[in-house]
Image 1 (cartoon, helix red, strand yellow):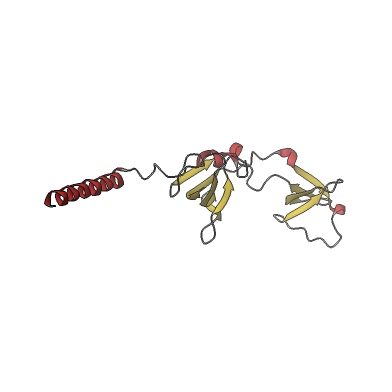
Image 2 (cartoon, helix red, strand yellow):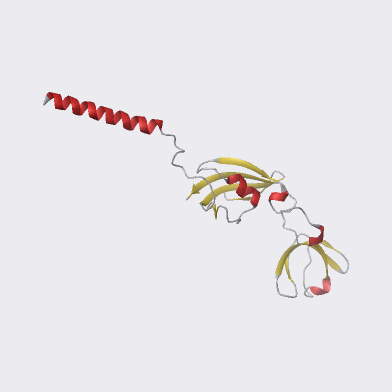
Length: 172
């Protein structure tokens, strides 16, 4: 009986050491999901332009998307590739990989008579105009002239270098 007890103690000790070695020696990233095509990713971010915070998820829910579906700007999606939950990264994105450059042809003069008579024109105001087919286009009143309103139909962040401070919340 004493021999059996000694073998059991030895077996338990080996088993316990094996578990400890496995637990201690196992890199934590072996089983961590990585951002890759088809994965649902949630991330927290702060977006800055010219060192001014434009948008943040701080105090709210992380932004979620499916990686590889082009639902976020291309430069950001590319930089998130391979990141794991808990990873943090400062990402700088050029206009070409974000909302593009400012296009001169997207700045149009619109006759003031096309607006309602009581319309309050204000430089910087976001407005929505419709084409003859009924498609709506948001634009920013860029300049007021005597008979026309200059409207910029570029994305408000076009031509800007974007800086994202990103932390991956989850990858499923």
